[in-house]
Image (cartoon, rainbow, N blue to C red; front, side, top):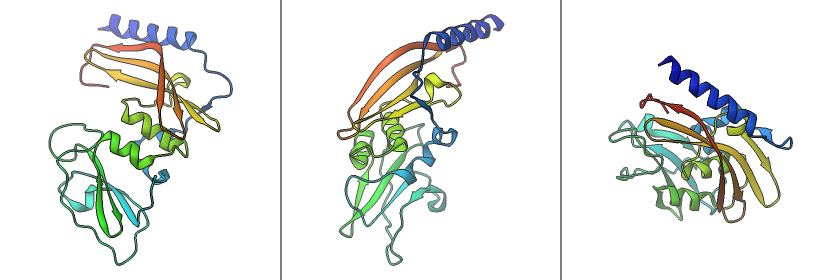
Length: 201
């Protein structure tokens, strides 16, 4: 076991030495590596009177992750969809979805593509991170090669990661997102961590 951990550390250090993050990339703030903290920065593609992000938790008070500013007279009581985005498990509190109100009618956004459509134009860094997450990428602010960004007029670039399989491998990627279309391009920087532990990502 010690040999595996040592090898993992060596691989991680080798990758850190190989991946040169340009100086014009800034560190992603630590708070943005938590998905729930990204939603308040979302500027929807279309105008909605009200929208909220929920989980499929059976307790309505615990289900709400984020609510936009809602008119006092407005309440939406709709059934939970059968599936959503960022599926973590089977059962309660396992996925998220968006319920919005447009022209006094409820609209669901309940998969990764629909979340991308809801975001539309990529206005800021949190939206870029959220969009990357819909393609299976995440960030780790502990490393520059998994937690750096650059914002330009037409694109936002991120150094992010992907975790896969068992044994768990972590791979660094350079992602470029077109701000207008949301189109994502990714280039691998290589695997930097491998673990025999199948329970930890």
